[in-house]
Length: 148
Image (cartoon, rainbow, N blue to C red; front, side):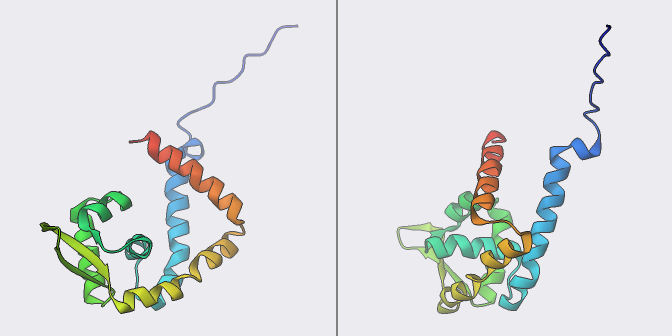
């Protein structure tokens, strides 16, 4: 009995594109954060800065840039807005006066308690458990590493 040829998948179909799935997923997930961050006066990029600073502060602008995978020119306006809102201060690094050190203010430190409600709210909205989200994050981290 003759074999029927296997059709070659159309690799240009939109629904087969990793870039499309990532773009839509990113937009949608970040959109879930918006109503949770608005009461704190934060945008999602500002939230990422605050997450880094809640882990360790002070940090230099260059260190923040590295940790967030953002160019300093992109990070600078975020820091200016966070400083204007009273969440952070930017001062010359005492160890290197060419570098700016970003520190949390009292308001910035206190904001962490309010932010602690965000991860459980996102998990509930996505209907995914911690293990599933960690597995997804690990896969995305491998993808990020492969693109560098």
